Structures are given as structure tokens and as C-alpha cells.
Picture 1: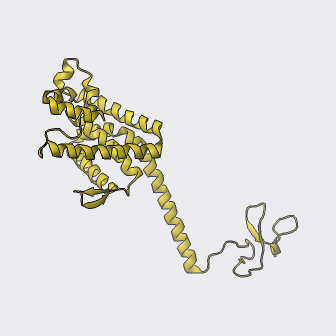
Picture 2 (picture 1 turned 90 degrees about the vertical axis):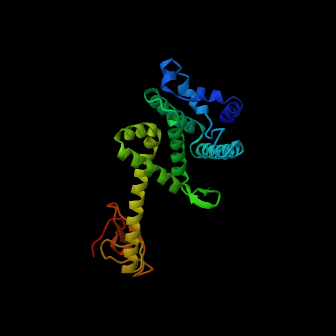
Picture 3 (picture 1 turned 180 degrees about the vertical axis):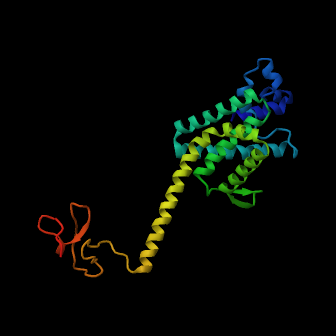
Length: 246
């Protein structure tokens, strides 16, 4: 909402836009408040290529998307955890901008970190690309991530820059992806085992460890688990529940 206020301020006094940018000259003069002021810079400049009216429209759309990200993360994580994540992203951007004061860099990476978190939690949410084509958010995130990776390969210094910028996301997402990968492998192994049993014959729930009979062989058989952890039919268990050989 403060970005909307600053948008109106810049619209009335264009010269005020420079106060919300991180510049080497400003930091050299001791204007360290610029390290925080950039967050209030509107995502859409008031004087865009398509005119002020279209800029207002794009600002409205960007605000809607921003609130969508905020509400979705708070619904998934809660307000406290979401706040820690957002503040962590801000701190990372401030550290980078202190050493590399490039205008627009902090805003770009900050919102990318928020966007990646949203795309990871809600990968099947759809956006209308060009207001017409529905595209799932994970596809957009994958394209953006591939673009960052390509830039980092071409300029290795950017790899460190992007890693620091996205540190809160990486700390949260990498263990989640690793756990998700393990779960997918376990599910795949269970599916293969199930299909093998189905192809080899009917699926059974009980099997005697001695006679190998199942409930399919004799529906009237009762089975119990003995003290050794194995399952036996009642014909091969004594009164004390211990296995009894044939």
C-alpha cells in the first residue's frame, strides 16, 4: 500500500523517485536509509512506455498479485513464519545492496524469492499470460530459475549474488525438495512391488511363515503374529502363541 502512496508521490513530483533508489553516490554520502527505502519503490514506474493510465492498471494488477502471495504464504505458514521469511529476504537484499548498490537489483531478487516460495507451495496455481493463456505458476518459476542459472553460468560472480539473495528460499526449499524426492522414490518402489504382486497372482494380506498358506488358499484360516514377529496360521501355533513346526 505504501508503494501506491509513493507511486502517487512520484506522479506529482517525478524528482522524488531518486530518493527511493540505492545508488553508490547516495551511500557514499552516508544516506544509508536508501538501503530500506527501495522497498517502497513501486513495482511499476508511473511514467511507463504505455502511458500513465496503463501504468496505473499494471500497478493494480501487481498489487493484486502481491496480496495473493502474501495471503497464500500466511495461510500455509502462518503470519509469524511468513514475516520471518520476508524479513530474512529483506536482510539478504540489504547486505548485497550495501556492497553492490545497483538500482533495481534488490527489488527484483526480493520479489523473486517471494514468488519462488509461492510457486513451491502452490505449483498448480494458474496465471493468465497476456490475459489469455493459462499457465501454471511452476512453469513460470522454472523459466525464471533457468534464466538465473544461465546468467550465473555465464558470470560466476552472479552465482554468489543470487545464492545470497535467495538464501532464505534455499534454506527452506532444498530440504523440502529432498524429502519430496525420497517420498516419490518410496511411492514408486511400492507401486512396482504392488504391480509385481498383482501380475504374479492375487494380493494377500496374511501368510504362514511355516506352511506358506494364505487366506486365499484357505479363507477359513486364522493368523496370528508370534513373539518372533512372524505371522503363523493357528495350525502352527501352540496355546502359548509360540511357533509349532509341522
